[in-house]
Length: 288
Image 1 (cartoon, rainbow, N blue to C red):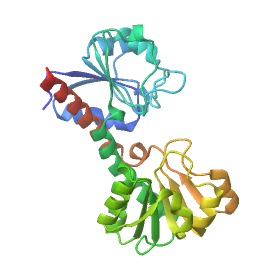
Image 2 (cartoon, rainbow, N blue to C red; image 1 turned 90 degrees about the horizontal axis):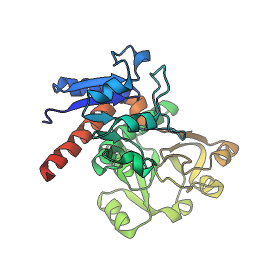
Image 3 (cartoon, one colour; image 1 turned 30 degrees about the vertical axis):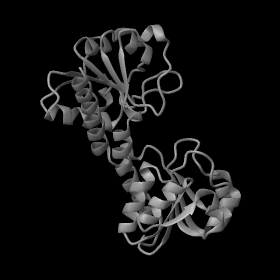
């Protein structure tokens, strides 16, 4: 158990609220800022929160393009630069697919940890993402998933977990990958396999789950891999892996499903953030 840490959570959505509640249940001291719209007790200023905290936790995603902290429950705009300026000798945990672009001088005496780039975060986050994707499929179709032909494009963290859940539900699962070693793994797990570049040449699917973050499903691939009643769920980060305008033109129902853990399972997502931050702190303690 992590002990003697004072956490300050700045901004975020329901995930951060549940993260805070879980930390408090572990007898951690947690202060919050940027949640006045959620009727959460907050410190009066960012300065006060940072002064009384050893670890600062920022949300996922952390910032918009103009360096504003993602804070839908805040009545005030929160700027990343303000937090950085006040956080000398603090540990800052943030969640971005890529790093934060801050002038090096501003980072002096600050330890930054990008929890969203961690392998444990990616694996754990793939579970609620996969379950939410299946929930979307169940809601959008008027048929069970049992027996339907599903394509999972990509064999990364989400692809691995999603395929396993779909298989357990009795779907006819095909998984695509680019590398022969991944195709071998897919076959060993008793899924159907297809090289990603061969998707158009195999069959038409009732449901396509795309996890590949670059354009795979152009107009030609959509025509050859779907039929008029198919559903395409794109789980890849923007701009996604589907030509949405072509799908619309063809009449194929397509959903770009982003940030699913926070939308569907914020309590689980908050626990994941907490546990990954605990893991980082434990690893750092063991290295000292």
